[in-house]
Amino acid sequence: MYSIVVNLLVVKNNSNKCLYCGACVGVCPSEALTLKDTRIIVNMEKCISCGACVKICPVGAMSLPEKK
Image 1 (cartoon, rainbow, N blue to C red):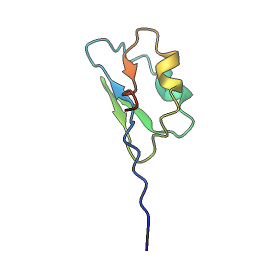
Image 2: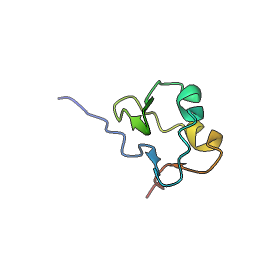
Image 3: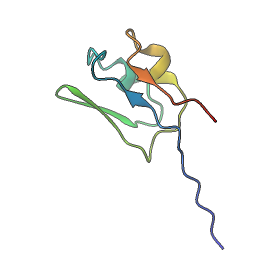
């Protein structure tokens, strides 16, 4: 029997607030974020939901869903 753990708390980027400064990309310990043109791309398989990007974002564009 195998168990699969799925991380449902993946970080989200609000493109209406985002300045695309790249601060979140630089601080991500799992390298789950990529800045491409005017988009922050989140690799859901790499995101460990640590919140580092949420804390460093100067405009509050990054967020984690609340645990239920």
